[in-house]
Length: 180
Image (cartoon, rainbow, N blue to C red; front, side, top):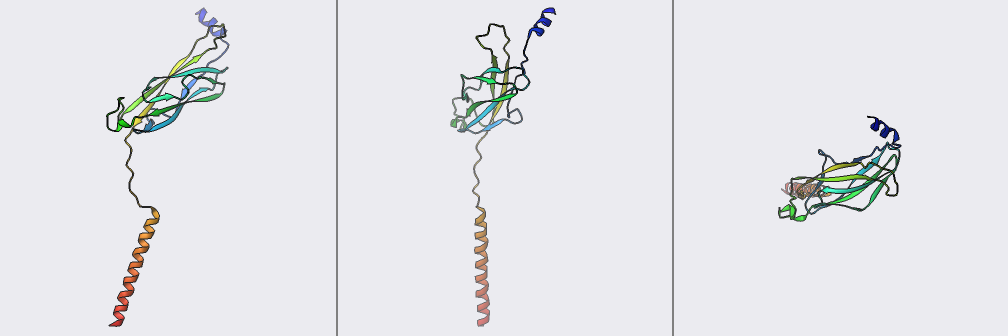
């Protein structure tokens, strides 16, 4: 108990670090076979007392997702947020079920990001690294076939043409009645 209390008193900084995303279980990243989508997770240091450095890796989903800067150490200043960009690509072959990876339409696949804080190697003090994971659900959907719809101006053209035909027929009928 005494060592814990001394450890808490000796710590001179607070690490308040979080990872967030606009995607979650009820709001997955939606993408179709043959498509590529850019997205990001957010590293936050909203209540800390010093800049946090973190490394991000993909633990699950490397067959469909790649970090844009896989070797980067992200610096997150106090009160700031930093985006970690990644790209998701679903193979075109997924639409037929002949993909090399087991990705198929209708499935939900989880990308698991591992975020680990890093300390400066030039400091001699002992520090604790913090690690956390962020899961991004990816929903693979079949592309929706486009409907062949008529442009709005075409409706006016059709109605105008019908009105002109009816008017001409009406005039012809009236002329024929007058001749008799």
